[in-house]
Structures are given as structure tokens and as C-alpha cells.
Amino acid sequence: MSNKDIILVGQFGSPLGLKGEIKVNMMTTSFEVFKNLKNYYNFDGSVAWNFKNILFKNNKCVVQVEKYSSREDVLELKGQKIFSNKRFFPKTKDNEFYINDLIECMIFLKDNTSIGKVLSVQNFGAGDLLEVKYNTKLTLIPFDKTNILSVNINKKEIIADPIPGILD
Image 1 (spheres, rainbow, N blue to C red):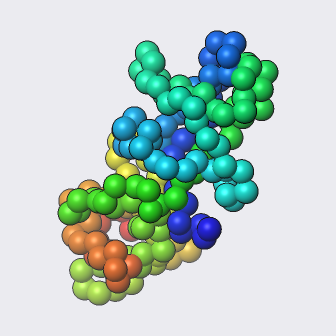
Image 2 (tube, rainbow, N blue to C red; image 1 turned 180 degrees about the horizontal axis):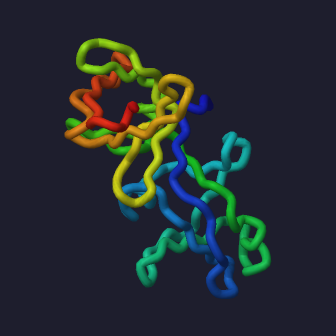
């Protein structure tokens, strides 16, 4: 499985109760998306987890992992990241993108000047930011209609018109 094929979907949190249930901090758009994924893996795909139950309790995602039957068993999972294969995700709508599709896209200004590749996508609570190395420094460009004019995932190109001050 290549890194482009796997997507971070959650992280194991704290155990819940005594029978091997554990909270999951979901990183999908909804509980339904998380629940409907077919496979769950560790970071390199070497460990697969099968969930007997996936529930939404008290605004939290709670899973019961097969072969884990006690609080002590699931304690070893706490903090581990959960990945799934991209092919199990729903198709995106127009102007929707998965973060891993944006990584490595070239960013061009509207005059066709290249400003670099997307290194990562950050979100500190106010919206997604494209991280790019521009003129030897890391720069964050808001991923919104004001700053991003178009995205072509097939060509791996993004056309941007950053507001004054972002590239200075």
C-alpha cells in the first residue's frame, strides 16, 4: 500500500469502561464516513484492526476492537493513529478535495509564476491553510475563494491570488 493510498482517519483515545471499548478521535468529515470505511490500519498497513462495534455515544466515537476484551488490552492502543485506504472513501463533489490530493500540487500565481509545491495542509481552527516553501521560507496560504482561484487535481496545479502580505 503506497502512502498516497492511505488516509489518516482517526486516533485511539482513552479506554471507556471495562470491556475493551476505546474512544476514537475521528478525523473524517462525519461519524458515518468513519463507520462506513472497510479497513482500518496502522501507519504502514502492517497491523489491521477489525471493529466489532462502532458506536456514537455522548458525541464521541467509541469502538470495540476484535481480540481486545478488557480495559488493559486497549490501553496499548491509546495514541495510535488509524488509517484507511482512499478507495473506501466517498467520491468528492465539485470543489471538494482530500488533503492528500492537494499535497505536492504546484501553486502558480495568476500570471503563471510558480511559487512552489504544497508541502502540507494545516488547520488551526479558522480554515485550511496550504503550506508552501516560497523564497526559502515556509508560507501559509488560506485555502479559500479569496486566495485560491482554481484547483486541477489531475494536473496537480493550483492557481492562487494571495491577498497582499501573504507572500511578503
